[in-house]
Amino acid sequence: MQRGLKTMSKKTKVVLVVDDEDTMREIIQLNLSRSPIPITVHNASTGEEGVALYRMLCEKGEKPDLVIMDINLTQWGTGSIDGVEATRQIMAFDPDAVIYGYTAWFTHGVEKQLIDAGAKQVIERTVRPSEFRKIVEEYLSSGE
Image 1 (tube, rainbow, N blue to C red):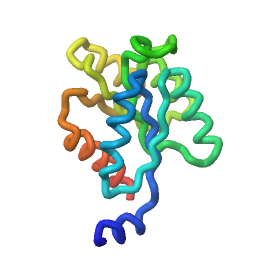
Image 2 (spheres, helix red, strand yellow):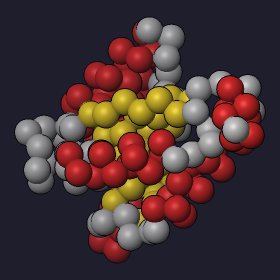
Image 3 (cartoon, rainbow, N blue to C red):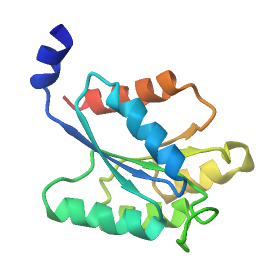
Image 4 (tube, rainbow, N blue to C red):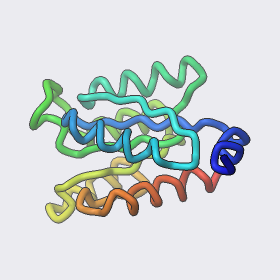
């Protein structure tokens, strides 16, 4: 009950998840649904879809508070741009966008490419779900 009262007083945060793996998007959404912070999650399965959805949400007045971006978006999906390029395009549209990379390719040097493209940080996909949620919650609650 206390949790519900606490949740009602907070503004709902908007998170955009861009990942070509259906299962990963579902896991992230389930994980974030356990947060005491009210979060609306929007999903995109390609880099192109992520960029388009980011723009559309901004135009509707629902700018994402955070984008969670996979790097390798062309392995399972039908898209042709990776997370680095999608990050560049979102940052070109909105230089104030906050993007966190979330990838299993952490040791391949691609995290630097994502940071150079404008991401604020990169989270290793091997991090425990509770730790991932804590990282997201810390950012989302920092602006309140």
